[in-house]
Amino acid sequence: MMGTTKTKIAIITSSLAHGGAERSCGLLSILLSNLGYEIHVVTVLDEIEFNYQGELLNLGLLKKQDDSFLGRFKRLLVFKNYLKKNNFDWIIDHRPRIPTCSELIISRFIYNPKNVIYVVHNFKIDKYFPRNKFIAKIIYKHSPYIIAVSEEIKKAIHQKFGYKNVKTIYNPIDNKLLNSLSKEKIIDKKFILAYGRIDDDVKNFSLLIDGYSQSILPQKKILLYILGDGKDVEKLKLKVAELHLTEKVIFKSKLTNPFPYVKSALFTVLTSKYEGFPMVIIESLALGTPVISVDCNSGPREVIVNEQNGLLIENYSSNELAKAMNRFVEDQFLYENCKNNASKSVEHLAVASISKQWQEILSK
Picture 1 (tube, rainbow, N blue to C red):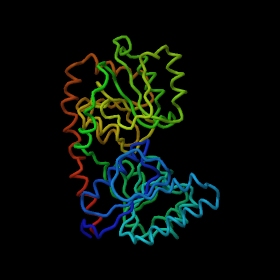
Picture 2: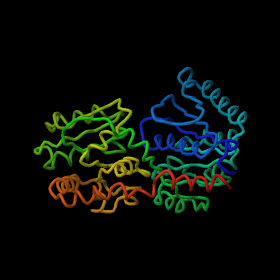
Picture 3: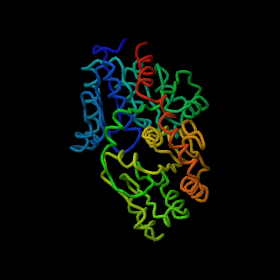
Picture 4: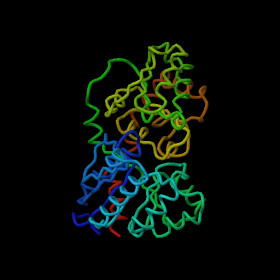
């Protein structure tokens, strides 16, 4: 299949809001649409913030009307009929695939498994695969491809399940879009930045705040901006207050465009317990902003070359994080070197390059 309007693709995602995985789904819809494919996007939740292209089926609107057992059954029928009516050549499913019972139903009775490509966005592969290998085989054995967004995820799938149909395709960067979204003028103050879903169990913003509090940045009047929404905003604000940093740590919610802040930050920081292939890192580097990241599974070590485009540090150590922050502030040569190398270090993730990789598998 070549990239023509005759080739129809459905991209299935939990939502188009909040996180990097969801942002990458929107970007993939734009990428494939620009290649000439007819794109449809199906969202499970009524959460639409990120840019996308194609026809939208928002199952979340039905979920809001009726989330009873009968309502869920009706949504499955709507979904099944939509797929049948459009007769898609490919389905690209980005959702975390739990619980197992629901996924068995979807894989056996909703999908045609021979044209479904499953995408795994997280190193915690239990979010995507049943623990039972026999059931996992039932769901995945006929899929032509399982796409891992990092090499570490690919290895984890190989090690646990032994599948041979796993391929790595990194999340892409749309430099043109990023540059256009980052032009807005913002505060004229020095600050560092973290952004994403405010879920401390995953993103570990507590470690970020501890590292910042132990660094020299507060006394040098370098602020910490935390952008995003999520369940732990109030908990983190309380922690900041207990550290007497309320005027130094600024939370901004309901912000659909973080990129003016990304471009203006001295550097961005990622402190996650685990990731997939973090958009925070590649977006920052693409905009010329160096990164400090913990060496979590997975993604950071596949992008960051230590002391060349950022600093890669031991995870769960506020002391190491504080030292890294201090180095970027005090060692101007190191900082400028990382900043100068930032954008070119992710050129291989540009839309043109990632498009070719998707086109290669969709043309088979």
